[in-house]
Amino acid sequence: MKTDSRKRFTLIELLVVIAIIAILAGLIFPALNTVRNNARRSKANTECQSLYTAIVAYEGEYSCWPANVSSDGLVNGADYIKLCKILTGDNSAKKVFYEVGVGYDENKGIMDPWGRPYQVVLDGNYDGIISESSVQAVKEVNKNAGRTGQNLRKTVAVYSFGVYENDKLANNIAELAKKKKLVTSW
Image (cartoon, rainbow, N blue to C red; front, top):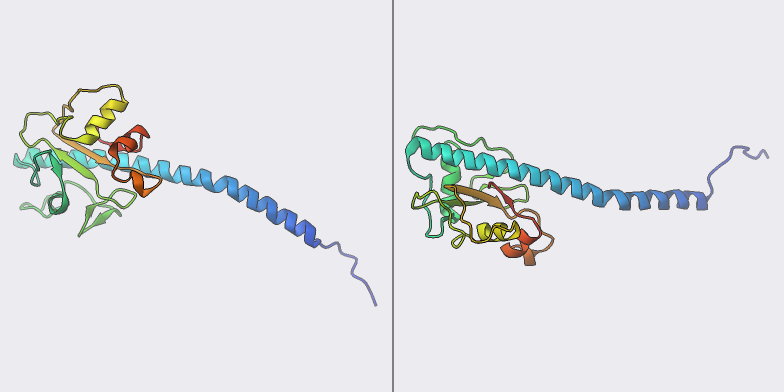
């Protein structure tokens, strides 16, 4: 009987190779997650700016906001969905102010890269100021930038809560701003 003279891998050698591959994968996946979140953050920043521009263009065209504004300036719920529909062409002139991409849902509006609606703040009294005292996101972003007590001298502000590690941070704007998770148009 002839023996095969070709060299073969032993079980130990295969296990060592698999362990090395697993260690490399363990090092690469967190880096990929960071790159993915940076890309989402960049996309959210661009979309915040585009949404801001679309709202300002609509207001310039029709001399009114595309949605109802609450006392604190936030556009929430059904008003946000209405705003999104109007900006995407569901208006009297069928004019498109905002080109929608993948992040649009007819029932939820324009969504950020993490699947949550953008937060829109409008200057309801047309004085050119979004008050720091009425919008917590403005207050917290200013605080972390060392600009406490300053109002936002804009008529429109758009922001996203960005990526957060756990649901405890989801509604904690102060903590999100402190960790620089908020993505803003200002």
